[in-house]
Structure formats: C-alpha cells, structure tokens
Image 1 (cartoon, rainbow, N blue to C red):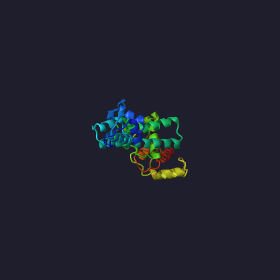
Image 2: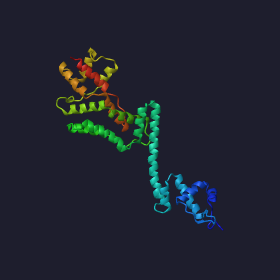
Image 3: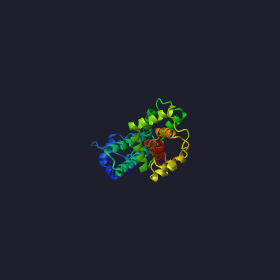
Image 4: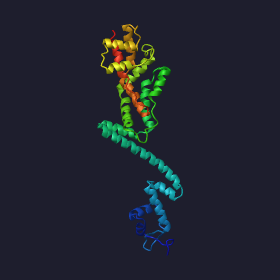
Length: 301
C-alpha cells in the first residue's frame, strides 16, 4: 500500500501534521475534513487527499481566516485569492485600529490622563472617520443653525468642519492629543454658546467686525512680550502704528468692542487643532496680542 492508498487514523494524522487529535477531530466534526472510510471498529480513516486538505485548512486558519470562509474555499464557492484579498483588507483595518489604540495608550501614559480622558480617548479610537466627522458636523449645525450669516458665514461654517478623511495609520502624539482636545472643546456648552454668539453678532448690522483687518498685530505682540501696560504712554505710541491716530477716544473704545466680539482664545485654539489634524504648519497664538490691543483701545477713554 503506497501513500495514495494508505489510510490514516486521526492519531496518525496528528503525528504526521503536528496538529492535535482534538483539533483534527473538531475540524472533521464540522465537515471540513470528512473521513475517507471507517475501520471495522468504527474509527475514522483518512487518505492522502485528506492530508493535503488538512494542510490547506491549517494554513488558512493560521492566516486568521474564519471557519466559514475555509468551508467556502474547500467547497469551491470561493477561491483562495478571493478569500485572501478579503482577509487582507480586514487585517489592514485591524492593524490600523491597533496602531491607533497604541497611540491612545501612549497619550494616556504621557498625559497622566484622568479616567474621563481615558474613556474619551478610547471612544475616539473606536469611531470611524464618518462618526468623528459627525461630532464636528453636530457642533457646526448647532452653532450656525438659523443664523443668517451670509456667504462669509457659510464659508466659516465649511472651514470649521474641514476635518481630514481619517487619522493616519501611525498618528503622532500631537494628532491624538488634538483629537481628544477638539472633542472636549466642541462638547463644551460654554464654547458652543460663545461661538454661536460670534456667529449671531456677525450676522447683524449692530455688531459688524472691524471695517478693515488690522495690518499686523506684531507691534501689539511685541508690546505684550515687553510687558508694556495697555494704559501706558508707550502703549499709545504702539496704537498709533495699528489704528488711525485721528480716532477719538470714543471711536477707539467702539472699535475695541467690535474686535472683542470676535476674539476668543478657545476659538483660536479650535483652528490650531484643526490645523494639527490637517497637517498644517503650526501658527503662534494671535489672540493674546489682540486682547492687549483691545485693552489699549479701551484705555483711551
């Protein structure tokens, strides 16, 4: 009797393949490895073709392919390349999820996160790109809903929801932290009310933004860095570089109120976080310098 006609018991198959008797019996019970014959005592016997079939089952299982897909391959309802492609896609998704979770755990360890932050980061790691986008879309819808903001406001709304399609496969610590901070920010009711107030103010004629953008806040930034008090004589000299020196004290105060309406550190932080997620170069904060300018304009009275 040669290999083509020789029959093997489950125990002999186990020794030949290195698999356990229990595993072979389990696969046989599922119909993945039907016996070729039965011995006089009723024991299952398998031929050389069954050995080759067993090798295929083991190879597919070691690649993580499920038993249902293995059955389809054995029954020729699916080809090995088709199953391989499907599982390669699934593995790509799983690998990406694991990388993102690793980044989240690194962020937790680095930040010394609270239980609440850990929960938030874990939830974000599980969200799809569409679900993460929905968080921002809901925020923008609440902020701009019912506000007649005109073309400028519509452009602002579009910009505020401009997220990347997805986190990269290997998100940096900064990107993970940005997602966490952004989710916390847009979920803050006070922040939502502040942004909506800005949107409403921008849609009314009573509180329009300054008629012309400031040429530069650098003089104000330099004054702030130098510790110049907004109500000092030095500050008035800086103001003359930034606004029309002919403005009366009342006009300067009115200008300060218009600028203050559209100035908020958290809103600027929103744009910084969006920039991190979109891979844009970081930009230095401008709001502290603008706040100095507002204080200097108010001091004119």
